[in-house]
Each structure stands twice: as structure tokens, then as C-alpha cells.
Image 1: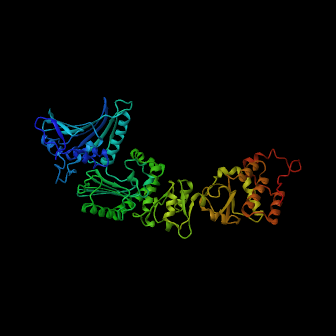
Image 2 (image 1 turned 30 degrees about the vertical axis):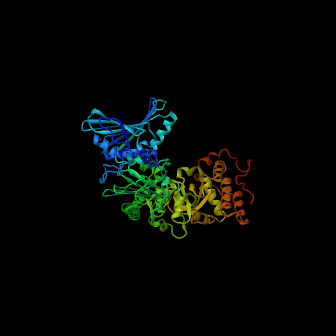
Image 3 (image 1 turned 120 degrees about the horizontal axis):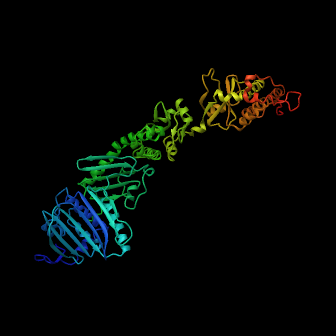
Length: 622
């Protein structure tokens, strides 16, 4: 059946067909812009390596052309398979996609006024002109080297209609041809407008929008499979053309990269939460070209996808998760030691997001892993490990899991003590950690632990007299300690005026140690000879006493000792108060060396007893 009528050609025209076959066949295409897929498919079947699609304005018209560098056509190809419905030269050839001989009819779906076909091979070119009334002209276009085909659709469109036409053409190519096995370039030129011509590469690798995936190539079939869980942490917003790919589940079926069927709504047994794509020459589209045939090849492909999810995908996720955990914990210094290319590959935020995405996949079916096998990044390396699995064993009983947003001096000290702190540098990590260990208690490391750093000897010399008075005052009040020193506190309890820690005996340098806040609070009121008292230099109370001690170390020391006892024990009992008051009234002499340079410098200015001025030991009433 030949639906086209020729009124000028170099030989007799074939008999006219019954009216309406072209219009009837055009109705099978649900998407009128699927004609672009059909023309790309024809080019690929002709062996094209490159296909150029161009949409442009012409004086009084719009031209949409598809040019390929395939094998071209002879005259008999044009007059036979091209112009005859249901006569396909590809029937029985598994390397070709088209099977029904109706694809070329789709060019009339957008109702062009004219369709021009230029084709050349074996040194000869031919020009075919098809009109909307189904008449055609075929003429010899003279000699031409090489081979290829160009199909051009001419329409009369307003500028607004042209803009919409160009948008729909772009969307159709992205939808139907984005995984094509040959290069496809789209150019759009609006010569009547002020916009610049655009050029876009349409073809992209076969891939799924997931944090991790596996690709399996088996004979002529390619599978790409990944979990949807966690992908929202890393993926870009979906466009209208690929919105389905970002669904909770997604299935895509392709032949040589051209779309047969895609869905985010149809759920296949055992594949909920999975995004997958299958490309195979064994998969074929239905006659309506809007679905894939549900034949043996289709069901075999689904069975293989399920096998890939249960085995290779879960193994790949476990391996990649360990790498992502270590990468997320990489410090700036460690990144600086890598090559420029490696540093440019990802940012810290991208590495944190990639880990969060894989972690969520590892906690979600069908790719869920054993919680004790899931590695977590550490804020500071413990015994050289940047990440650790089995956190439940590292926090036995009621011990909390410790977390931190970044590495600091406290996490470094905790790591040296063998205490792992999970790095939670992504907003989702804490919630995912709790999801992994629902019975565990999670605490911020800075709220649960503190780092105590004693001030060096040189910094304590100026406060020697103050420290001596505090030590004597506590001893007189029967709350003596091994020694009194100054320190800085980082993390928990940094608002306290002082803390008590076990005395560390002979020291070769300033004391630095990490402690659980609950242990420090538990011994807060235990002023004993076996403990050392560390005054927090950041405390307002200690800072005020240090300033006062430059003039009057005795008064400052006694007041500070009273304040520290109140902070640790609450209101003083009468005996403690009387002893401190007696010490304030009758202070023992201070050793000259212990008075420190600031106290010594005030001696000349301070009035002697009996020469006026307030007594140097005045304390607060009990």
C-alpha cells in the first residue's frame, strides 16, 4: 500500500491509494514529537556515527532537520520501504530497531507543510519532496560524495509558536534519545529573535540517579541498577524530561539507547526502592511504540535485575560505603597532601553528602546491610582509622555514641585515649546514626567530655601568690588539695570556675587530659589531698580574682577559695566559713618568690599595718 501520490517524477506514478492512510497511521503516535526518535532510529539503523538535529527560523517558515552520516538510500530504497507502509527493510535483522515500516510516517504528526528528504550514497544523490496532501516529487540531485541522509520539515509558525516548537523538540530528544549509541547534537537558531544560537549534546551514558550502582554487561544486554534510598542527598533537581528517573522506584527499557518504555509508577515484584535500566536488542517496542513488549526477553531481564540487587549491588554498596566514610572524614591537611586533580574532584560538603546518601541506602531495603558492618566516619582518627564499623561494641551498655560536627583539639585528645567520635558533618547523619542504633543514646562530644590544658609555668608565675593563698585557704578549711594550678577548658563544663582532677604526680610539662564530664561532676565536691584543683582562666570569677591579686593576693585568694567551695558544695557550713574568715583576718606570711612579679610590684604602694588603709586580709562575712 503506497500512501503517497506523485505528480511529477521521471517515470509513471504508482496508483493512488485509498484516502487517509497517512492520517490514520499518524494517530498511533501518542507524542507527535516522537518523529524525532523515529528519524534518529532510522539514522542509527543506517550505521550513523553522528546525527545533527537543527531547529531554525527561515524567512516566513521554520525548518526542523535531522542529518545523519549513515549509509544513505538508493532510489529503490526510497520508492520501496520508505514510501510504502508496512514494508520494512529491517524485518528479521536483530541489529535494527525498526520492524514495522511505519516510523517515517511520524514526520506528519506535527502537520508540516512540506517534508524534504535528501539522501546520497555511491556517488549519487536524490531529493524527495513530500507534501501534506500526500503527493510527492522525486528527483535526481546529481553526484555527491560520501553517504548520509537529511530530512527537513517545513512549517509556517509564529515566533511564539517557534519557541514552543523548539522546546518540545528538545524535550522529545532528551526523553527518547538521551542514551543513544551514537553522537546526537541539537542546535536551535532563532534568526528573527535576539537570542544566540544554542548547541547541546543529547546523548549521555546509560546510568541511574542513585548514590551507588552496578553495571553488568552480559552478551548484548546492559543492566544498570541502584537503590533510590539516599539519592536525594546528592542528585540535582529533576527536569520535566527525566522526572520519572527520580521516583522511589524507576524502570527503563531501551534498544540501542532509544527509549522503549520508562515508568516510576509500575512496580515490579521485588524491585521496590530500586532504579534500574536495561538496554538490549532483544527488547522491542509494541506496535503503538509507547511500551515494551512483555515477552520472554522482558521477564528474563527483570529476573536478572533482581539477582543483581541481591548480590553485586549490596556488595558494591558495602565497599563504596567504606570508601565514602573515610573520604568524608578526610581533613583539610590530608586533602592538601593530595594532587590538585584529587582536590578538585569533590568538596567537603559533596563528600559528606555522598556518604549520607550511601548510608541511607545501607539502612533501607532491599539493600540494607548489617548495622554492625556499617562504617561511620570519625572526627579524629583512632589508631590510624579514619572510619570504624561496629560502633555498638565500642559503646557497650549505656555508654552514649559520641558525635561532633568537625575535628578539634577535644576530638583529637579523645582519639588518643581510644574514644571514637562519629563525624556528623551532614544534616542527615545524626538521624541515620540513630536509625542504625535505635536503642543507643547519642551525645555531642563537647557536651559529654572536656579537655583540660594546664597553663605553662611561664604563664603561672604572675599568679603564684594567688595560687598559694587559694591552696592555704582550702587547707585551713580542711579541704586541702595536692596543688592548685591554672588551666583552659574546652568542651563541657567550660563555664565552671574550677575542676578537680586526680593529681598526676611528677610532671615533665603542663598537664593535658581528656575527661568525661559526668566523672568530673561526680568528684566536684571532693577536695582531697589526692586531687589537683585547676582554676579555669576563662571563668569570670577567676579572671576577677587574678586582677585583684595584682594588688592584694591574700584577699583575692581567700575570696576565690570561698567562691570555689560554694560552686562545688553549695552554701558553706558554719565551720568552713569561720575557718576561712580566720584565715582572712590572720593570713600567714607569703614566700617572696611565691608572690610573683605583679604582687611584688605593689609592695611599695601598699600601706603597712597601722599606717592607715584597710587591713590586707579583709574577707566576706560568713
